[in-house]
Length: 288
Image 1 (cartoon, rainbow, N blue to C red):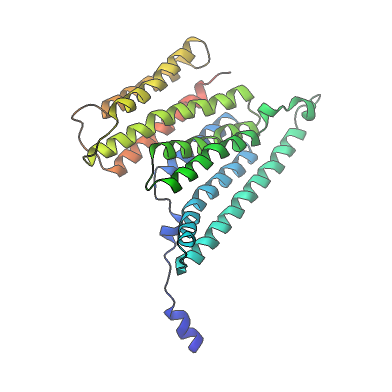
Image 2: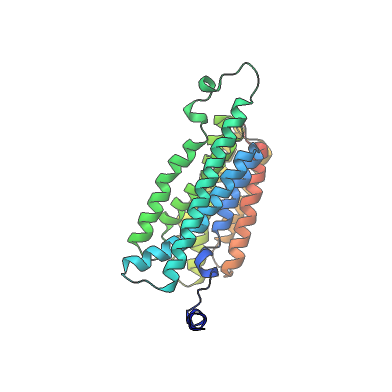
C-alpha cells in the first residue's frame, strides 16, 4: 500500500512536450528530402534511412531539454524521462542506419551481372557520404542554439540543410546516379535559402518587428533564376523551371508591402505544400 501511495504521488510527466519538436516546420523539412530521394530511387534501404532521420528529428527535443537541465545542475522528473526518450530514439536512429547499410549492401551485390561493386561504387556514390557531410551543418546548428537564445536564421538554415542530406543518401541507397543525387541536395538547399528567410521575415513583420524583407526577396529570386539556367542547359525540364518561377513569384507576393498578417500555422502549412509541390516537380524534371 505504501509503495502504491508513493507511486501515485509522483509527478506525472507529459510526453507530448518532450517529444514534439518546438518548430512544426521541421516535419516538412524532413518530408521533402525523404519524398525526393524516394521518388528518385525507391528502396528498402531508403525507407530505413527515412525512419532513422525521423528518429533523429524526434530525439532533438528531449535531448535538448535533458541537457539544459543538467547544465543548470538541476534534475527534474522530466530530466530522467527526456534522457530515456532521447536514448531510445538515438538507438532507433542507429538501428535505422545499420539496417540501411545491410539493405544497401544486399542491393549492390544483387546488381546486374558483369558489374564489380568494389570498383564501380566510388566515394561520390556512397549513400553514407551525404550523411557524413550533413553532420557539419547539424553541428553548426547545435552550437548556434547553445550560443544564442532562440532560433537564429543561421541555425534554422543549418538544420534544414542537414536534414536535406537525406535526399541524396536515400537516392544513392536506391541506386540513383551520383550526379542526380547530389544535384537533388543542391536544389533543396536553394529551396531552403528561399523559404526560411521568407518565413522568418513574414513572422517578424506580423509581430511588428524589424524584418529583413530585402534579403528574403533576393533569396526568393535565386531558385527560379537557377532553375531557368538549368533548363536552358538541359539539366532541368522546362516545365519544372516553370514551377520554380511560380513558387518564386508566390514568395515575392507574400513579401510585398502591405501584405496582411497570416497566422504562423497557416504560413507553415502553405510552405509545406509549396515544398512538396517543388519536390514532386523536381523528381520528375531533374536530369543528370
